[in-house]
Image 1 (cartoon, rainbow, N blue to C red):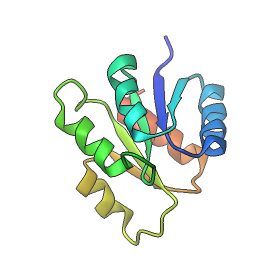
Image 2: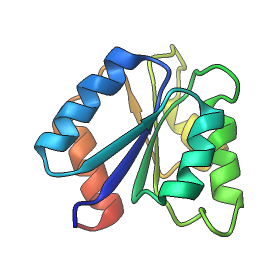
Image 3: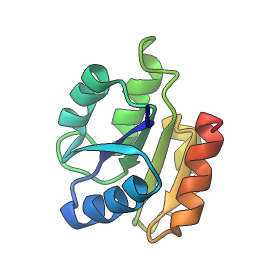
Image 4: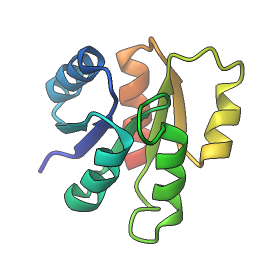
Length: 122
């Protein structure tokens, strides 16, 4: 059974691009357009990894990540935070949010795949 990846991002073009790349590598991909819907999907779908955009409407990526990492039923799910923001130190964002890894947009597909495989040990 393929691993399930949930992409939470408010940019449809970005979601489609990442979705196609991950599906080509054998992953099942689902997506949510904002943090509020994404949180609900995590609880319903139980993804193996969450790819989470930092800047989104309703609930931003930092808060979504905090909530996932604080809840006993979701704290084990790896979260990769990604952003196009000009944040100087993306590693600080990872630590503050509790994310397992961070990527700055644009990123190389191989880097994303490597992170997913490392975090899921596949």
